[in-house]
Image (tube, one colour):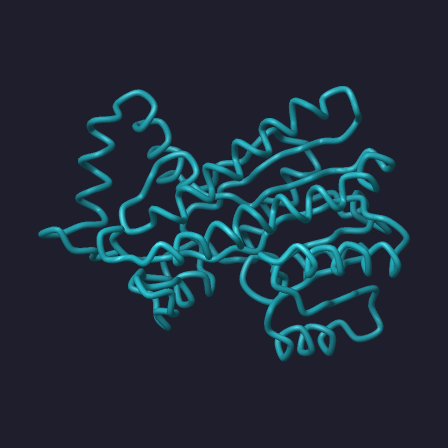
Length: 270
């Protein structure tokens, strides 16, 4: 990977205290980038500061479902580094519950973090990114191309992210700003452990085999390579590409295969 691409660039990353976000922070700092990140867990952000002591890293406790928290994150990043070259909308939350059993506010909470957070941070950072002819990235999901049972709110939020960024990309074609989204597929991270249940509480465990999934570090490397290449979008893993292909050309078959993978006797098994 061409490490000089990110040297001295200001990269703002939401959700940088865990998983893919933390891996992005670690790699970018090693490449000489100026990094700003936010998260809801103060202890994890403090640990991140300790790991990268003396390096150009700005951290802030923030809940990106709140506009004022996003404004504070973007404003302090601007104050700390003078502008933003790359915004990576990475923070996200998942869910695992059938809609018939799920409170509506669970869906609203997932939409608030995944879509509203992307909307708020992108809108707030757009001015400086336009000035610098920078890059806006959304970390989306295969669930943004194919609705997944037990993840109705998550799928809705990722469809919204994809549509929002595609519209923005078209608006920005002549501006010099590059807009892209990436869909990691199943990646070993904390997102399934903290996925919301039908009452909006964290499950506290993953029912997937995390050891067989792509690592967060490898996923972050793919994302950064796609940014350098200014790709339109990035679909990771064979399973992810296969799912999108089948859903586009053989949707009925995709329905059956997805149902078989996630459901058994009407109950979620994954």
